[in-house]
Image (tube, rainbow over all chains, first blue to last red; front, side, top):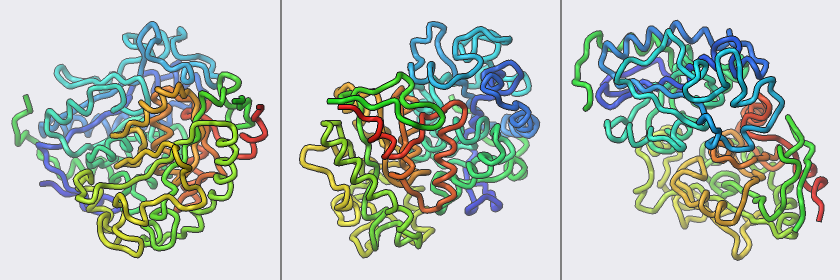
Length: 230
Length: 229
């Protein structure tokens, strides 16, 4: 059992064999100019600061033999899995399915829908495609984690108050112990980054724990101590 | 039957499709339980000010009467666990113990957050009327491990108006779940409340970003004013 004493609101303990690193929606559509995030008027630089620490954490997790799971938000090309309320609300300059500089916005198979090069999944690492903000709804994530006997999640990705928060809330209700890594999650809005992390650790850790990626790297072994799950 | 909308709301006039038929709109009353807003309940035992979580009760009671008069579907939810705690995740129990209000332990209102105990009951101001749907849920979200989605789809519900406590925890989790499932959601600022005013305000603000990433925010007066019979 490894322990991160610096986590808030209290120390967080996890076992390598029952822990996964979850990398949420580090997609070009959210992180690069010309994508969906930018079309909503957001400054993508606010999210890009997560790439370097997350790349280091990903390397450390792989070296330690941790299960790594990536997620992507997106829809089928015919938009049959996109609720009308999601498609039509608001007034973005580009809607889901519209043609953008990186292909059709948030459509599976398009260049913009895929994960940024710096954090590209390795062959064999599961990639969960999800139609919503939460990674559990309408996906096989819960079954995948159950099959691999995962109980603890190290949570990273974007954006803090939307997809990361929704997924952590879903995971918490399902009994998973979530440690959110502050420097590896990002919001377009600094205020939501701060309050989003505070909400997770509030009321005795009502949704989970919060720490920094360096806290995790400090306790991870540099060589695998377990066989990867089959 | 009537119609609701367009409601003056942020960030857009709700709903996205102009107006909602009251036959396809449900009023959700989330976790108005003594444990969260009554003296001696779970939140009180944790040392929080229940004045903050009770603040939305008068407006919710008024909107509840409005919804009943319109014949709208009203759904109440309750967070709680079986008496043997078989549906209580170990980490949820551990964390509640750390802050001095262990789920399942005896308190002034019976065993904390246990089904059938006085503290688990909905407070009288917004008590369910006979025949109204009550969803018992083991988590923060009202969709996980419940039949809420089935009940709503069976009744043809497409639009949801959310009230309840607490804004940033159970109401927000439920709104996020509903939004992913395609329901068009409206959360009411005066019919919700949190243990921390800052978290209440931030949770409402989050809804309005990105063109309404989870739906819209309004008040009960806005809903009543936008209702036509």
